[in-house]
Each structure stands twice: as structure tokens, then as C-alpha cells.
Length: 70
Length: 133
Image (cartoon, rainbow over all chains, first blue to last red; front, side, top):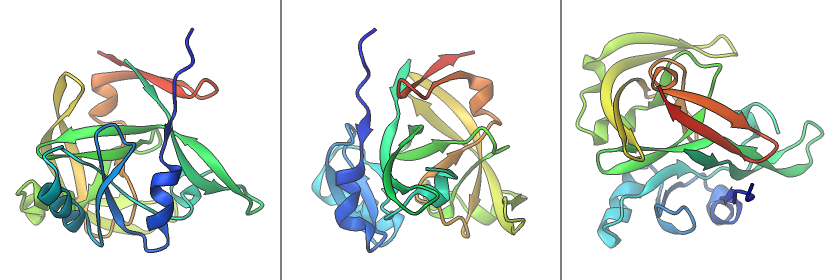
């Protein structure tokens, strides 16, 4: 069975994690289209510069609190 | 359909920085996707109220629902039934929207989502499979 390629978000998240910004990623999740201090701001900023439907999430430095583990 | 795990920065119990394999799902709504954590421990799906407001929902007109977290803190929310899609599959999902939900992802709980799909986790191989019911 061919090995499946993981979606590596670590390098995308890193520059924005200190400020906990919301990210609008492209559909392939390999590029940050836009950021914002709120979900809506990130979406609005993405819609201004791209027709691509963005993938929204928040950048944080450590997700262990949220995923209950490591 | 096979979906790869996502890699996110995390830390070990000893505080060492590590990278975690996490089962996220790009859930499609009108105008955007939300990266959601698949949480088999959660009864219902939960999202920040902003996501609902963007869809034009009047959040407080939904069905009141109190979310009880693992720390036993009660969080008010309002349930709405909304359309979502995954790949070619379109469904209605009951989502509890909460202003107090401080979470970097949406949370996909069992109700609805696990009725639509059988989910088979392959943690070691780094993917999970969704099979429509």
C-alpha cells in the first residue's frame, strides 16, 4: 500500500502562532491566503485577494491543550 | 475515502516540543471550509458562533444547549441545523454554536457525523477512512 502523505501544517502555522491569528488556507492547505485577528477578518481578507474557498483555523503555538495529548 | 492526518505543533507531557499527528477534517460550508477535529468523545459538534454568523444565522434563535467540558465548566450554546459537505457528500449537521468556544478548530462530535460516516482510524499509518453509511 502506498504511503499516504500527511498534511503538514507546522510551517504554515509557525509565523502566526505567537499572535494566535486566524488563518485562511488554500484548499490544498499548503499556503496561507490571508490572516485575521478574528474568524471573520481572516475570511474577509481571503475573499479580497482570492476566489478560492478558504480553509479556516487558528494558529497557536502548542495544540496539545486542544487535542488532549501529544 | 482516505484522509491523511494533519501535523501540528504540540508538546510532550514533559514539555518537549513535538509534532502531533491529528485527525482533522476540512468540513465544507457555504463560502468556506472549517478545519475540524474529529472527537469521538464529544456528543455533538461545536463551533465558535462566528462561523454561524457568517452563514447568516441568528445564533441565539437556535436551540439552547449547555456544553459541559472536561473541566466541568458550563458553556452556553445554541444548536442550529446547517448544510455541510465532505467531498461529494452533502448532509445536514446539528452544530452547537458558542461565543465562549475558544478552540483553534471546529469540533466534530458523534451526533450526525458518525451517523453519516463510519470512521476507521489508522493512527500508525497516519490516515483515517470515511465510509458513508
